[in-house]
Image (cartoon, rainbow, N blue to C red):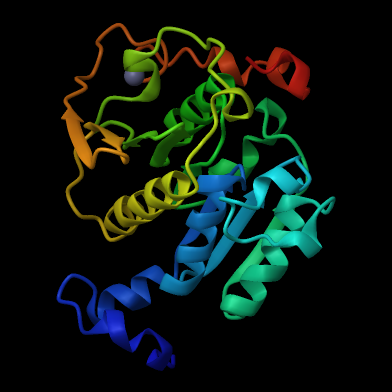
Length: 257
Ligand SMILES: [Zn+2]
């Protein structure tokens, strides 16, 4: 295995040749290829993993380009997942990529089954509840991200070890859309970069907390919020995976809160 192109990270104690080989054996699913999702895909391709599975139903719009780093004006009206797949092929052709120009809903949870890690690049709570239930069911770690205006959040969910998304969110609710509130161009890239940072540590079995990190990128403020496991959590404590129900198997944009 030729590791030459990874030389600058091989010299880090934290990675080294053994851990690089470990990364090159990992498969990751990215749900949502918008702002945070495209930065996550870009950086994972450069970091070097075995395989990436991408899913997003959306096409690229002109208003996406200011922050969604994988796309340019020639990509407008093309599918995000398919375009991301092509771009990753140019960044690092050794990474195998599989893509779906589709909605991630409860009919797609088999995509979670055999991966090592899931990244949330979505913009709605219902999809996150579905990811959370699927990851708890199959015991797959995932990284939650959100980015709006100038504020972002990140949290690792490691089944059986940390709190999960449903431990501190009761049910999906409508979130402010960045089409209304706006979003600073740097924000999803900063949050996506931190998410990959966290993801690399998860993939290399470093000890990870379930703390929620809140970033105010305009004022350079970081808050770390402890999220304890909830003994009554429907998903991780009671194993009641209601968001994997057929009811959530045919989600269109209109019914996503
Ligand atoms: Zn939980």
